[in-house]
Length: 318
Image: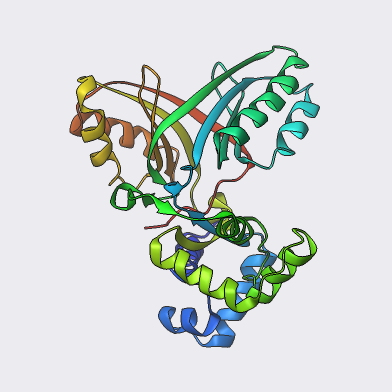
């Protein structure tokens, strides 16, 4: 996968796997101009090479009765504390865990469906950190999500009402899929065997279509290995504008930047937080330089990601 042509072709293929509706081999192969068999062979090859892993979805944060709450935590630890990482990985709300360079050595992103779930999990994290060597961690609460996994949320800010069954379906679509998309039969089976809820395939199908139509499901996508398709650099960027009254205006412009996959308003001095992906490490310097030239930015602070312990890697490739 070091050949640039292979990387470009893999990016094109992964881009084709993303869509507003469920992945179907025959449809996707036509869209990319390949026969069904050739497409399936390519899909199997990319799975075998660990270029792609599992199918999943991205969920709109603006779902009620409680909007999804994104919480970031920076943790100071050392290589002699593997148990700390192991315990963090057991928390189901953990969506991303990175080893980083800076004052802290771990960066975690959690997504919660309710305040109760947040505070219960925070209590668990407090207990984990109480037994750590440094006992040093910092919680960063997000105020607003502008962009997630390359998808702008700005045009879909209208809250979407869902019930507990809808939420369970979304969770299954996000977390329970393997190397092929999950079927309504398999979802119905999970409800019956794991959740002890009887729900028909037709009901699940209709609910999924409703979730697609109303925008609760932002897109269907696949998790992949960024480095194997040419994305060498990942950075965590904090941004401070010259004029604090222009946070929203600045965010709307940054939202359009293809290198920024995730963008949040946070309650910190550096009030915008971005996850940045670049194909070459050197490209980040150009990204920062262009940022200062084109935007009203006073200062930035960057963490370089050394290791993606839990990959958050189903971002849109443009």
